[in-house]
Length: 321
Image (cartoon, rainbow, N blue to C red; front, side, top):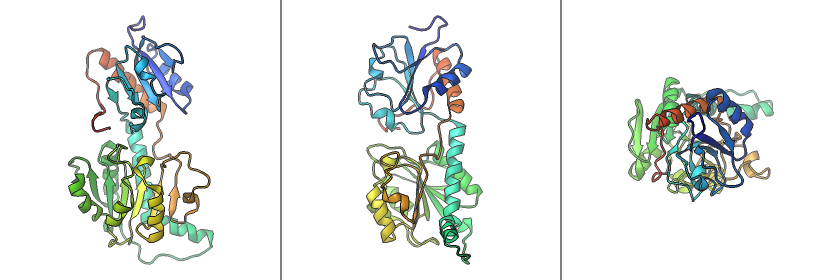
């Protein structure tokens, strides 16, 4: 069930993206590997690999010779939205380009809040010339990272270079150089008490859905140099209870937030987030999946798998990431 050149065919199922761009990149990276777009009719027995973003539910279960699913995105909750997934390996995208872009975003937003960017932009709009005389050094600030996977670990290393202290929290215990690591429910309280700026890079699973809620915010430290903490969510919109975030801002449980993701995207034009003075919005732009940086490692994995080598960066189905 392969092409005449011995290569299994690739299905692209990319809801909301332009498939032609990805087809062109496959043509450059793997010119001998046939690529098909999402079929509308009968299942194609020649397809061995599926490259997906929010694929149509039920599509993959109809491919009788599917050998692996490749997710286009740092998270895989969009894949698991299909409850009829076939029992084949799911491969997470791990790309130096994607990782670097996310770390750029995290450092940018942490520095913006640390160096009072929202305050100075508001002053500029009102033509106010007023310097804060109590600007803290980066070494006075602790950044807490929720999620110590590939993205979280790299962001932590970049923040440490800038001089910030870094703590981290994950579902299971991790060891990250220079980072005070906490794990599980037992370690969550100490983590929440440890930081001034919280960066969220968690996967979306049933356990993490709406973890960013009032209960969590009330447990965060309010004694640091910034007063109430800052929240930066560049993970998934489903991680946040948006009504609780707005209430926490108004009540002073949070001093400011940056949100790159939302429960509903694009964000409703009538959403109060757009005009809230303590909110910074970016349009799910923290780390774009760029075809040229993702297709080549996927094609290499497919070739290696056909030579009998194991796939890497596999998703743990039980954990959900």
